[in-house]
Length: 43
Image 1: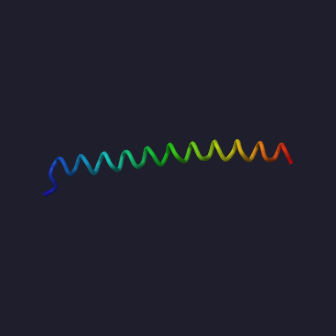
Image 2: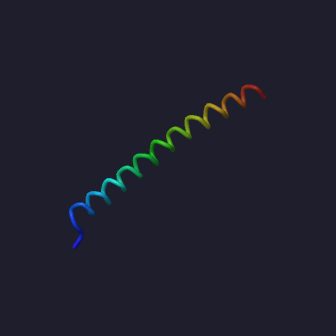
């Protein structure tokens, strides 16, 4: 049987991974949109 510690660690890891993924995706999208907009305006 999985201990509470193992269960909590696994749960926290999954939660943090999901949160970090979402945050990085959002940040990269915003950065890429801004970069593409500037590039298109210059051309």
